[in-house]
Image (cartoon, rainbow over all chains, first blue to last red; front, side, top):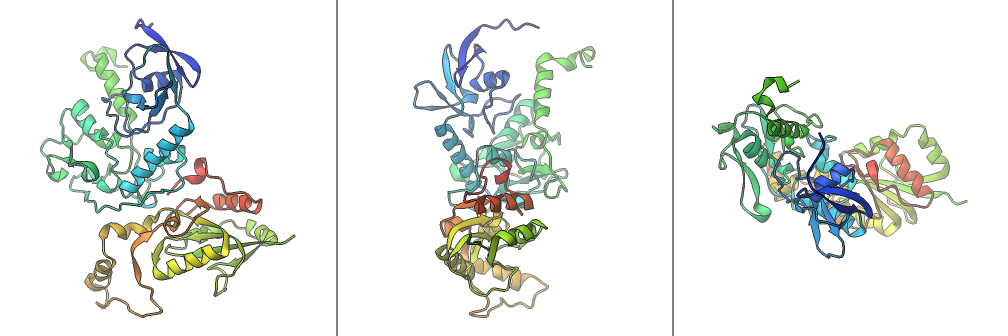
Length: 247
Length: 180
């Protein structure tokens, strides 16, 4: 099917591309095959704009913009890869590692982790900031899943997917700043939740080892964030309303 | 030509990085041809020597002995490298940090745990006191390069050593810097 939406011209690092009016810089970049790293963004969920890994520079504007939460505009000159952006992305990674307890060597997601991959991508070989080493809980009260606060980066993918796709809204953020944490069922143990449907979408989308299946050992947890895109696309198309559309 | 003087040291870690070092297998013979290993936990040398070209330090800084050796290494080495995740980040060794005061941890392990004799080991001058927090090596001394990994795979260590022997720093891009 041909797209008939109105378009404008933008450029990524000096190369011209056609952008759809109303799409975000990140969406446009992904469609055009331009790499902009991201963490909290997940196709199929609303934009959160919290992690700031996807920051880009726009023309002469001194402010950095989160590509996921910035709409394209006519003749926008976007830079995705500059020394300044590299420095900021690396700093963000280091802050995320310093804030939580990310012990890759003993993590269920070791080797299958978006945070770990992003650290490699951004060139983080060590963390300059002091490790906060916060005392954090592990909630393994759920019969199928485990929530390990130590690995949580507050990307809110679990909060969004549970609310927007599953419609259960088990997850929320409580507190602020360094005390912020993801909670289940208004801060009751996950296993006691009456609203959780056990669907596992929160586990599928988690970028780190914060959410995993029960019984997974080091490096055994693999997530499936792309599942949400499949669900979101199917829902937009109303595929399950007519079984004939499903193939 | 003067042989390069290489050292390796073992602070608060499990020695897995040194096991991985030994996994370089036959390349160790080549290393022995072109460099002198002047200090290492796998060689019987008591004191850290002077005039070392590069020292690979495994382990985090967890106790007073670790701290003393780290300072000594820095004073006597031209290049110091954090060797493995414990030196790089604290890693498993630093997992006690969120639990707080080391005295409480010692009591938990040696007094409360049922299979112990109920006493915290104490031998001044032999058993080194724990530091309040386990620290990554670069929090204590200046570190010139990082070789992450738990443990760093043998080929990563070899690539680092080959770079050092050619007078450059180890690769710090791509998979060479993956933690875990």
